[in-house]
Image (tube, rainbow, N blue to C red):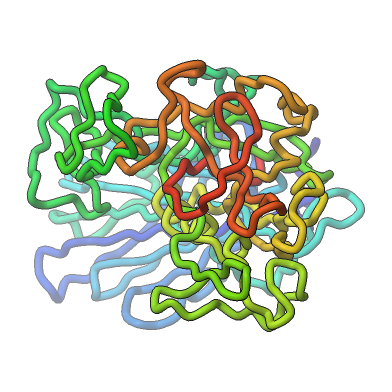
Length: 485
């Protein structure tokens, strides 16, 4: 495709916005810092179109468009001349508004400084990601409609330049290399890179017990991210063990002692791809390959008039006036204990797990899903306890999901995919573990109620789709989500 054709297509493409901050440390506070020359960008394999450049002098004013900048492509190498600018504050902030025609995130992979800048004592540091911004629906040619009057910043790419021995910065001595960035990796079942693999590595969560040779550098003070740093450079979660039963062991064979403190390595999560076109969306439906944690389905409840209802921590029955009687609530809109909408399982998945497992880059490609809680999703077994549909980024699978042969499950009968493995971390947090048939596997909640008993939920265990009569039990969490691959 010619540059002219690319330019036409870019008019209705994605806008990506990044900001580059150039900070100078002056020899004296009154010294004027001057910025001259052109920035050199290096972009491999793809083309990005720079729509405009804005400059802020870090004096509280709003960024102003650089009037003498001519729009152009960044493909291969591109010299971006922004003209000469100077101020007395010692720093500049540059905002590069970029249009991209592909559903791709980008990041700065390296910044090279000329020998002259290095000789002047100039140093740099960089971070950040450029993310795809979906402004409107796609038009007939498949591109996103782009409104040139709209300014949207979806990520900040920061480049900090410090010039202690210079009153000017020659931008032509700086080369910025950009590369495509995906917050997941396609792999095989064993986690080995495979562009056609049926799994992905995505997000991070505590999983494996710390090896005996690793020491925690500071056991009394976690890092800023809430984890503890190990001597191997990895992060660890600190847990006081509360095992579900006696005789449990970690994956290294050591016994789990209730009340003892353990550390668990924070590792990439492995997800199995159930389908790459979930309900015709073009997005993938994935499910965790392990039981990541444990929680009760609903620990606050009360029996009243022959039914069991969910309550708040004070024992007051939950009321949902918006719900239709017979869909998770009775005629007085009192919430049944096995309504997924108000469950602790759902609250854990959409709250604590979602925020703990994913950063902003990962969250940007997780799709909000209308979670099907219909009678059909329960296999016709939900009765009055099945709730209305919910809208969630992370959710539990349904009875119909784990019996869907198109997802790779067996419809009834013994199925190894219905025997999820427990993580060491989940075992320390009260997850149940089998010791025979499918050893080291556990029981994981499904979101579908079983209508025979007012406190019964479906689960997967021992290779089967079963049900658990007591929702207050702390059982395994097996998260699923819809993702843009």
